[in-house]
Image (cartoon, rainbow, N blue to C red; front, side, top):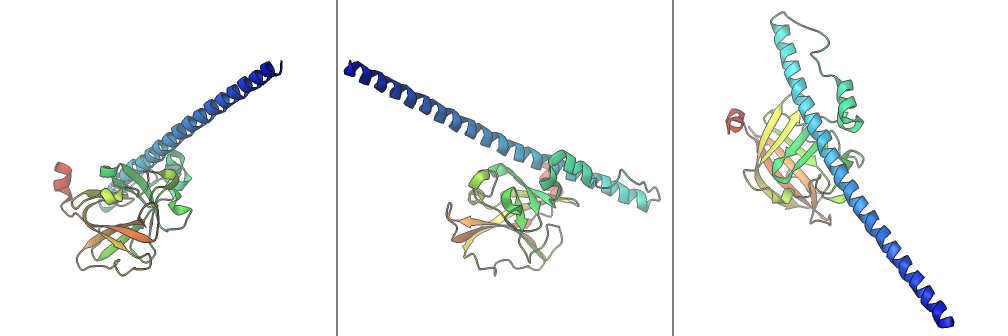
Length: 234
Protein backbone atom coordinates (compact mmCIF):
# COMPACT_ATOMS: atom_id res chain seq x y z
CA UNK A 1 0.00 0.00 0.00
CA UNK A 2 2.77 2.39 0.99
CA UNK A 3 4.74 1.40 -2.13
CA UNK A 4 1.76 2.26 -4.35
CA UNK A 5 1.35 5.60 -2.58
CA UNK A 6 5.03 6.44 -3.12
CA UNK A 7 4.71 5.57 -6.81
CA UNK A 8 1.72 7.92 -7.17
CA UNK A 9 3.62 10.71 -5.45
CA UNK A 10 6.60 10.14 -7.73
CA UNK A 11 4.33 10.29 -10.80
CA UNK A 12 2.75 13.52 -9.57
CA UNK A 13 6.16 15.09 -8.99
CA UNK A 14 7.26 13.93 -12.43
CA UNK A 15 4.22 15.53 -14.06
CA UNK A 16 4.79 18.72 -12.07
CA UNK A 17 8.38 18.96 -13.33
CA UNK A 18 7.16 18.38 -16.89
CA UNK A 19 4.58 21.17 -16.55
CA UNK A 20 7.18 23.50 -15.08
CA UNK A 21 9.53 22.66 -17.96
CA UNK A 22 6.82 23.36 -20.54
CA UNK A 23 5.99 26.69 -18.87
CA UNK A 24 9.68 27.71 -18.85
CA UNK A 25 10.06 26.80 -22.53
CA UNK A 26 6.91 28.75 -23.47
CA UNK A 27 8.09 31.73 -21.42
CA UNK A 28 11.52 31.67 -23.09
CA UNK A 29 10.02 31.43 -26.58
CA UNK A 30 7.55 34.24 -25.82
CA UNK A 31 10.35 36.45 -24.51
CA UNK A 32 12.49 35.85 -27.60
CA UNK A 33 9.56 36.60 -29.91
CA UNK A 34 8.81 39.80 -27.98
CA UNK A 35 12.46 40.90 -28.20
CA UNK A 36 12.46 40.24 -31.94
CA UNK A 37 9.22 42.20 -32.36
CA UNK A 38 10.57 45.10 -30.28
CA UNK A 39 13.78 45.33 -32.31
CA UNK A 40 11.84 45.27 -35.59
CA UNK A 41 9.53 47.96 -34.22
CA UNK A 42 12.49 50.15 -33.22
CA UNK A 43 14.07 49.81 -36.64
CA UNK A 44 10.75 50.52 -38.39
CA UNK A 45 10.24 53.70 -36.35
CA UNK A 46 13.76 54.93 -37.09
CA UNK A 47 13.25 54.17 -40.79
CA UNK A 48 9.92 56.06 -40.75
CA UNK A 49 11.64 59.03 -39.12
CA UNK A 50 14.36 58.90 -41.77
CA UNK A 51 11.73 59.02 -44.53
CA UNK A 52 9.89 61.89 -42.85
CA UNK A 53 13.10 63.90 -42.55
CA UNK A 54 13.84 63.45 -46.25
CA UNK A 55 10.26 64.40 -47.11
CA UNK A 56 10.48 67.54 -45.00
CA UNK A 57 13.83 68.44 -46.55
CA UNK A 58 12.08 68.53 -49.93
CA UNK A 59 9.26 70.65 -48.48
CA UNK A 60 11.67 73.11 -46.91
CA UNK A 61 13.77 73.36 -50.07
CA UNK A 62 10.63 74.09 -52.07
CA UNK A 63 9.53 76.68 -49.53
CA UNK A 64 12.91 78.43 -49.78
CA UNK A 65 12.73 78.34 -53.57
CA UNK A 66 9.19 79.77 -53.54
CA UNK A 67 10.25 82.52 -51.14
CA UNK A 68 13.19 83.50 -53.32
CA UNK A 69 11.00 83.60 -56.42
CA UNK A 70 8.22 85.53 -54.70
CA UNK A 71 5.83 82.56 -54.58
CA UNK A 72 6.02 81.96 -50.83
CA UNK A 73 3.45 79.61 -49.31
CA UNK A 74 2.65 79.13 -45.66
CA UNK A 75 1.62 76.21 -43.47
CA UNK A 76 2.23 72.97 -45.31
CA UNK A 77 5.79 73.68 -46.47
CA UNK A 78 7.49 73.54 -43.06
CA UNK A 79 8.46 70.65 -40.82
CA UNK A 80 5.41 69.34 -39.00
CA UNK A 81 6.74 68.22 -35.60
CA UNK A 82 3.27 67.07 -34.55
CA UNK A 83 2.95 64.72 -37.50
CA UNK A 84 6.40 63.32 -36.82
CA UNK A 85 5.52 62.63 -33.18
CA UNK A 86 2.24 61.00 -34.15
CA UNK A 87 3.88 58.71 -36.67
CA UNK A 88 7.07 57.62 -34.90
CA UNK A 89 6.52 58.37 -31.22
CA UNK A 90 7.68 61.00 -28.77
CA UNK A 91 11.23 59.69 -28.29
CA UNK A 92 11.91 59.67 -32.01
CA UNK A 93 10.30 63.07 -32.57
CA UNK A 94 12.95 64.64 -30.31
CA UNK A 95 15.75 63.22 -32.48
CA UNK A 96 17.92 65.52 -34.59
CA UNK A 97 18.56 62.86 -37.20
CA UNK A 98 18.96 59.19 -38.06
CA UNK A 99 22.11 57.13 -38.54
CA UNK A 100 21.99 54.19 -40.96
CA UNK A 101 24.75 51.56 -41.21
CA UNK A 102 23.49 49.06 -43.77
CA UNK A 103 26.47 46.71 -43.46
CA UNK A 104 25.46 45.79 -39.89
CA UNK A 105 21.71 46.42 -40.29
CA UNK A 106 21.51 49.35 -37.87
CA UNK A 107 19.08 52.30 -38.11
CA UNK A 108 19.02 54.53 -35.01
CA UNK A 109 17.72 57.96 -34.04
CA UNK A 110 20.34 60.55 -33.09
CA UNK A 111 19.81 62.79 -30.05
CA UNK A 112 21.71 65.87 -28.89
CA UNK A 113 23.16 64.45 -25.66
CA UNK A 114 24.55 61.27 -24.12
CA UNK A 115 22.34 60.98 -21.05
CA UNK A 116 21.42 57.45 -19.96
CA UNK A 117 17.79 57.96 -20.97
CA UNK A 118 18.77 59.35 -24.37
CA UNK A 119 21.02 56.42 -25.23
CA UNK A 120 18.41 53.78 -24.37
CA UNK A 121 17.09 53.70 -27.93
CA UNK A 122 19.59 55.68 -29.98
CA UNK A 123 22.97 57.35 -30.41
CA UNK A 124 23.93 60.67 -28.83
CA UNK A 125 26.23 63.55 -29.81
CA UNK A 126 29.14 63.79 -27.38
CA UNK A 127 29.35 67.11 -25.54
CA UNK A 128 31.89 69.48 -27.05
CA UNK A 129 31.63 68.03 -30.56
CA UNK A 130 29.58 69.23 -33.51
CA UNK A 131 26.08 68.31 -34.62
CA UNK A 132 26.07 66.35 -37.89
CA UNK A 133 26.38 68.65 -40.91
CA UNK A 134 28.33 69.05 -44.14
CA UNK A 135 30.35 71.95 -42.71
CA UNK A 136 34.11 71.60 -42.98
CA UNK A 137 36.47 71.74 -39.98
CA UNK A 138 33.96 69.85 -37.82
CA UNK A 139 33.96 66.59 -35.86
CA UNK A 140 30.82 64.76 -34.76
CA UNK A 141 31.25 62.06 -32.12
CA UNK A 142 28.27 59.73 -31.72
CA UNK A 143 28.20 57.57 -28.60
CA UNK A 144 26.08 54.44 -28.45
CA UNK A 145 25.58 51.34 -26.34
CA UNK A 146 27.05 48.04 -27.41
CA UNK A 147 24.56 45.23 -27.00
CA UNK A 148 22.33 45.22 -23.94
CA UNK A 149 18.56 45.13 -24.09
CA UNK A 150 18.43 46.31 -27.71
CA UNK A 151 21.00 43.80 -28.92
CA UNK A 152 21.83 44.36 -32.59
CA UNK A 153 20.02 47.71 -32.81
CA UNK A 154 23.02 49.31 -31.06
CA UNK A 155 26.70 49.79 -31.89
CA UNK A 156 27.22 46.09 -31.08
CA UNK A 157 28.86 45.22 -34.41
CA UNK A 158 30.61 48.43 -35.42
CA UNK A 159 33.90 46.56 -35.00
CA UNK A 160 32.93 44.74 -38.23
CA UNK A 161 33.14 47.97 -40.24
CA UNK A 162 36.12 48.24 -42.57
CA UNK A 163 37.74 51.09 -44.45
CA UNK A 164 35.49 52.24 -47.28
CA UNK A 165 32.23 51.06 -45.68
CA UNK A 166 29.45 53.65 -45.80
CA UNK A 167 27.62 55.35 -42.95
CA UNK A 168 24.65 57.58 -43.72
CA UNK A 169 23.18 60.29 -41.51
CA UNK A 170 19.90 62.03 -42.32
CA UNK A 171 19.13 65.30 -40.53
CA UNK A 172 16.35 67.86 -40.91
CA UNK A 173 18.55 69.79 -43.32
CA UNK A 174 20.50 67.26 -45.38
CA UNK A 175 21.59 63.69 -46.09
CA UNK A 176 25.24 63.00 -45.26
CA UNK A 177 27.30 60.10 -46.62
CA UNK A 178 30.50 59.09 -44.85
CA UNK A 179 33.12 56.44 -45.53
CA UNK A 180 35.01 54.61 -42.80
CA UNK A 181 38.71 55.52 -42.73
CA UNK A 182 39.97 53.77 -39.60
CA UNK A 183 39.48 52.35 -36.11
CA UNK A 184 41.17 52.92 -32.78
CA UNK A 185 40.90 51.74 -29.18
CA UNK A 186 41.34 54.39 -26.48
CA UNK A 187 40.94 54.93 -22.75
CA UNK A 188 37.53 56.31 -21.66
CA UNK A 189 39.05 59.64 -20.59
CA UNK A 190 41.12 60.22 -23.74
CA UNK A 191 39.28 62.92 -25.68
CA UNK A 192 42.39 64.01 -27.56
CA UNK A 193 41.22 62.02 -30.60
CA UNK A 194 38.16 64.19 -31.12
CA UNK A 195 39.94 66.99 -32.96
CA UNK A 196 38.74 69.14 -35.83
CA UNK A 197 40.93 68.88 -38.92
CA UNK A 198 41.37 71.56 -41.54
CA UNK A 199 39.13 71.03 -44.56
CA UNK A 200 37.57 67.81 -43.23
CA UNK A 201 34.11 66.83 -42.00
CA UNK A 202 34.72 64.02 -39.54
CA UNK A 203 32.41 61.47 -37.92
CA UNK A 204 33.48 59.20 -35.05
CA UNK A 205 31.36 56.37 -33.64
CA UNK A 206 32.24 55.51 -30.04
CA UNK A 207 31.18 52.53 -27.95
CA UNK A 208 32.36 50.36 -25.05
CA UNK A 209 35.22 47.90 -25.59
CA UNK A 210 35.92 45.04 -25.28
CA UNK A 211 32.42 43.61 -25.44
CA UNK A 212 30.77 42.82 -23.04
CA UNK A 213 33.11 44.78 -20.76
CA UNK A 214 33.59 48.54 -20.84
CA UNK A 215 37.03 49.56 -19.59
CA UNK A 216 38.06 50.94 -23.00
CA UNK A 217 36.39 52.68 -25.93
CA UNK A 218 36.26 51.60 -29.56
CA UNK A 219 36.32 54.39 -32.14
CA UNK A 220 35.26 53.97 -35.76
CA UNK A 221 36.41 57.00 -37.75
CA UNK A 222 34.76 58.23 -40.92
CA UNK A 223 34.91 61.24 -43.22
CA UNK A 224 32.23 62.95 -45.31
CA UNK A 225 32.05 61.91 -48.95
CA UNK A 226 31.72 65.07 -50.99
CA UNK A 227 31.01 63.41 -54.36
CA UNK A 228 27.50 62.31 -53.33
CA UNK A 229 26.15 62.15 -56.90
CA UNK A 230 28.65 59.42 -57.73
CA UNK A 231 27.40 57.35 -54.75
CA UNK A 232 23.75 57.68 -55.74
CA UNK A 233 24.49 56.66 -59.34
CA UNK A 234 26.27 53.52 -58.15
